[in-house]
Image 1 (cartoon, rainbow, N blue to C red):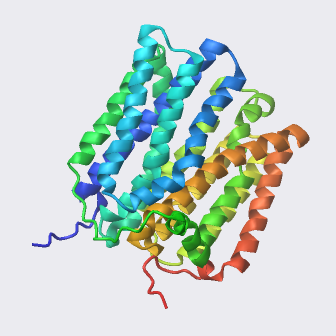
Image 2 (cartoon, rainbow, N blue to C red):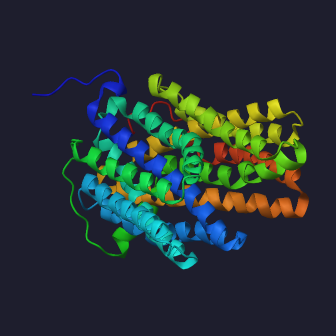
Image 3 (cartoon, helix red, strand yellow):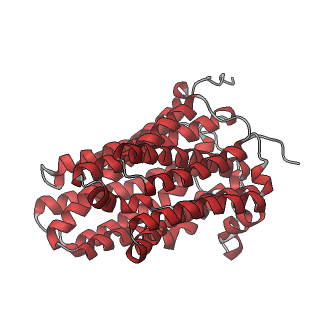
Length: 408
């Protein structure tokens, strides 16, 4: 018997289990990030070591992401997701045990963070690839928007909760992170999926780079991924928020906290709206408009001397970025055959993660040369230039109407 499809994504039990599991992991990841940074700085007092923590999380993504995509295309994605999360949970447990035992050291923390990052490298493409097998096609755009909201929710709540729990000692946030991750594993065990039968491709160089080849030959997927990539590379305003909080607004740590929360708050509001009222037409035009709004908001933030206006600009920036992310993730999933989704999502995740980190580096390097305000201003203008170039270079994306428009 075929069960009727609910009108609301909130009434779709498999998705709600998926969403709850994803929220648990996202919150745990944010808590662990705060606890690791604070503990590392307490042990070494070195800003360089804080940078190494980030590097240890980036290296596994660069090394294993394409392998992770091929694995996700060959095996049960739900069980794989549980496996990778168990690796992360055990890494968090190791940090908790080391902290309570008193033998947490710089080397141990870096090694454990590398293990955690390896789990994340395999988890992220698997998690994205699993979603189309959880919900029917009619609910998929809403599911992507609701899934995107988990990141924003975790970004707002996670760091604050992790910092407050750290006052009780590093063992506490690590333990709660471990509990949240294993709660996700349990939730996934109760989630039923309907995965279409696929043919396992052989493991060779052709299959390994198939995701890159597919993206290169699909103008919509290539256009949406590359547009988001270059927009984020030229962004990076959030990386310079400490400078704006201190030198522009003279508000200290409290002002920095508010500035950092503004983009996530804007993104959370728009993803909540897209969950109940998904985009149905002119998705290509909306994509370009949202990226242009991202650039304009960046320029306004760079030129603003009003704290309230800057908060509004950052909220708009976060909302515009969230719209582009929802459209990108939806188009990538829908335009890609199920047997290719793991590898395509791996490339997408690699580009998205790398662009954020390189965008922060671009902003910091340019700020060192020109100052923080010119660095953000140049980035905002560059985003608008990219939008104009991409509108001409990718007409298929510009004219994309419905997510489910028939291919000719």
